[in-house]
Image 1: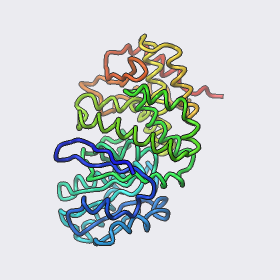
Image 2 (image 1 turned 90 degrees about the vertical axis):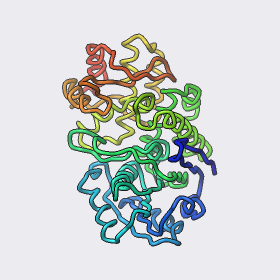
Image 3 (image 1 turned 180 degrees about the horizontal axis):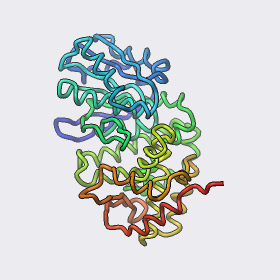
Length: 362
């Protein structure tokens, strides 16, 4: 087992990474203050891992909430099912919520924990690659709105993160590729050496090589933890973690939540950001080809939906958490391994990127 730390002063917490960690009471007990535990999972994950995970909480009063599976259910209406369970079972301020699932479950459980009785503890047990390397770390929680992704939420750090790599054995190939998108992101934004490693080892990740996956998860979490420690609430440098996300969130919202997986949209979004970076003179054509190659090799789409016009993209990108004073701010690449957040880009070049990266209708 590997143990990393997210250094946030009194809100610091460990990330445990390893095989067979589900059900390990020794990992969770130090992080539970009261006697009540609510495990939140979904209809896909619960049949696979709920009983195993519950073994870690035998010493507590345990209740469960099983939500429907999918991004389209990441709504306030579904969130109320968590609140209902907490109130029906009279959970107090020392209770602990446990998120057992992917990014949707983690985000919703975390937001419920942030808002129930003005804030209670929660533990992340991510079961997808995307949630293990990204969404479970850093304290971003929330739900979607029909007009914008993740626009309703709060920063609320978990007490610990338990990433059991054995849970990836049941992940389908599409979900695995979606998670790899976020792994690639860390290499592109500030870890060029890792990007080079990914170019060489992508086949091992896709083949679910245990050693390669563990290394990629550990390195991704370490990279993210460094950034979060510097800027917990995204007032500055943390925004670089959103490479590809402004484009990607527009795709997710425009196509309807769940049609494209988050990682698929981010993968395409990162390539669009690289394209615009080249048009601005920061990246070479060869640099963009390398980004295109690794996104494609990971099994991710490299073009935006044909049905989304440039105007539609711009309309949706304007509803983004990085927008300030009505100006769109994008995460672009000065070079591979160095990201920058900027509003100083030529909108004509952005339009060229939006046109160039749409799927050609047959």
